[in-house]
Amino acid sequence: MEIKRYEGNQRMSKAVVHNNTVYLCGQTHAEGDIKEQTTQVLAKIEDLLNKYNSDKEHILSVTIYLKDIDNDFAAMNSIWDEWIAEGFKPARACVEAKMARECLLVEMSVIAATK
Picture 1 (cartoon, rainbow, N blue to C red):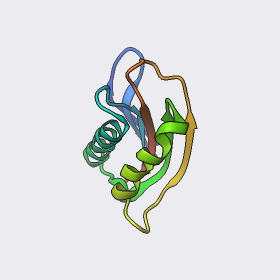
Picture 2: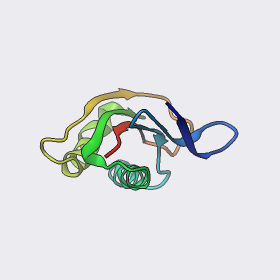
Picture 3: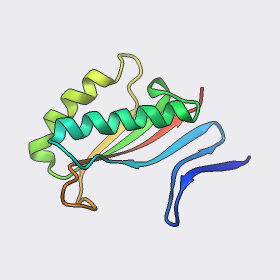
Picture 4: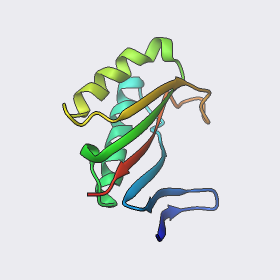
């Protein structure tokens, strides 16, 4: 099957579609507290999924990276829980990680089925 790569640069693609599956690169937002960053990251994910023939109800898996899991896990989850609809919860992993930039508190990487 064909592999389609979108919105790429010298290092990566923002989205890759293969075999009815959408793979998104890690999404971040550099401003605000953990709730603001989580809200903006989820908005970016939703926009990208819609752009590439998917949506949040088709998310299969998400990996969440938190800069400070001890202090930010509950606040991030409060935004996540409002965003993801009952009956459409994906497989999920959440880990603490050193971020690429000091200002980043959360990054999410998503795999979703196409519609």
